[in-house]
Image (cartoon, rainbow, N blue to C red; front, side, top):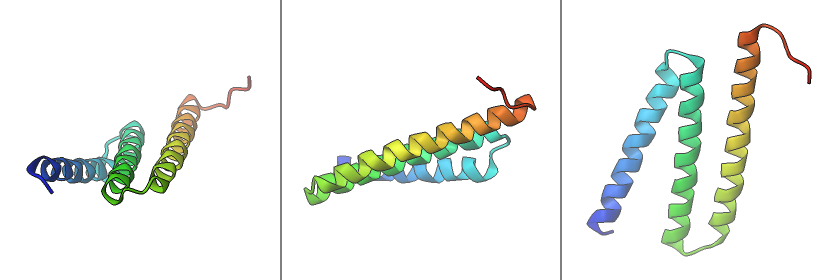
Length: 92
């Protein structure tokens, strides 16, 4: 690995650690949702990096599916928290 690749991996590991700390220690539910979304993005980027290293396009499909599922999960959690704060479920 070149120096630039090592720097990128080091920064990703640092971002993963910081996001995990925010997820575990976050003062509020919104902070935890944002940390979960950040972790989802970082794992998706890691899968894309693995695809580049191994030269296998199958990992790109896995990254795409993981990214979409992560996004849908975070949106569902955020909507549940928002509904819980209002006290009543709004019907549309």
